[in-house]
Structure formats: structure tokens, C-alpha cells
Length: 184
Image (cartoon, one colour):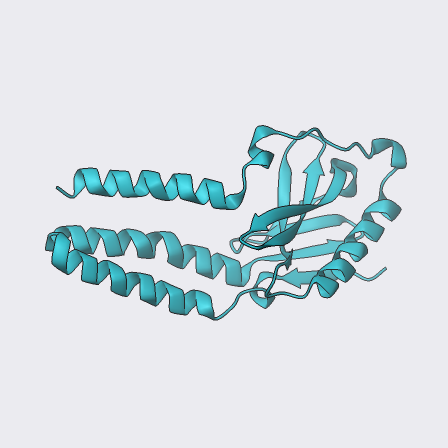
């Protein structure tokens, strides 16, 4: 089989950048009417500090699948290779996303860690057929490169039961509470 690279930038929608500008405009308007100048600058700076690195790392992230294993790069450095001997399970993870679902490919390592593979996802904006074909390639590599006796389906953890939406809402609530507390 041929080595394959899946790039994160192929999944990024241009609306993400437009949404960032909209959020910044709302923050500036809110800050001008309800907060001090220092509070407004801190709020905008915090938003930029959190979103810009995420956008750049998403654009630069990739996953390479080859004979040596799976190499994951999150946008910084040369990436980390997980040899096939360390990968005990490969699964498609399903996340609720409003009225539909999002899907991502995840590997489970022998030491219990789990890693989502950048560049491999499907949702209502990205082709599920292309995702299935890419996932099948990775499953084929995994099945050809590992011993069936070493393939162990991991147990479900509490963190797996929480959707990204729930986690995001909890973190956003915490962030709003901290900003509201310190902006007075």
C-alpha cells in the first residue's frame, strides 16, 4: 500500500475566519458600551490569543499513514510517529453536532492514550464518502501491520461520554464568569 497524507487544511471552511471577525466586532461593541477600555482590550486580546494559534495549527496539521505507523502533526514541529506495535485499536468516533453528527478517526495506544487524527473528519460540510474511503485505508494499513491478538477494544471512559459541545459550554461559562468577575 502507498503512504498517504491527510491534511487538516482540506477540512477548514473559510467561514471560520469570518466568524472570528464577527466575534471580535461584537466584543468591541460590547466593550465600548459595557466595559472599560482596559477590559475591552483584554477581552479582544484573550480572544485573539485563543483563536489565532488554533486556526494556524489547524491549517498546518496533518496525518501520515505508512509502513512505519501513523505520524500525527498538530501544526507544530515535525510530528510524532506511533508505530503499529503501539496502536491497539482504531475507531471512528461519532460526535453529536446539532441536528446531525460529526465523525473523526481516533487511535488507541497500548499505554491507554487516545489520539484523534487531524485531517480525517466528516460532518454535514465535508463528504462522508471521502471520509469512509480514507478511514478504510487506515483500517487496511492497521489490519495488515498488526497482529490480531494485539487488537484490544478499549473500555469507554467518562470523558468519552461528554460531547465537544458540552465541554465547550462548560469552558465558555467558566471564561465568562472569570471575565465578569475581574472586569468590575
